[in-house]
Image (tube, rainbow, N blue to C red):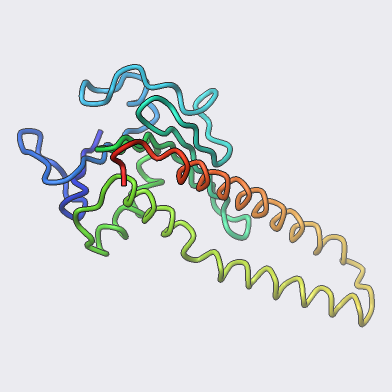
Length: 195
């Protein structure tokens, strides 16, 4: 488990030191199975069989539980998935370390100290969406090229070229629909004091 200080640009909290801001607890899925005493006891599981498959948020007494699963762009790579428990004065992220560390490095370089847990989660979501517009424009350009080829003459491999594009568009449509619902839940059910 790693504890970072949201009040000091995500600096690690020393075990004997105090955080100047709200703590961010990073746990691997294995660590979540037997969390340390600093994590509130009795947290509900974040996903069936420990596998995150979609974006969602659920209100609970005093906190929000959510999962985020970002599809790989271009069908290459792997999904970026994590769970979060948003409390008024702390945030718990459950993720494979290699999955989330690069994002945290980018956020710490932005150097915005004194973030609340809710604002940090917002910044993390913004970072996840950062390059999406470029990816969507690339999909659109590929689709336009395919349409132009089809208008000139129907290429023999039209179906072969169209199928991966349709799958990619469908995958991102589901992702954005789920993300929209997640953001709606966050806006409506933010724990009291978690601005």
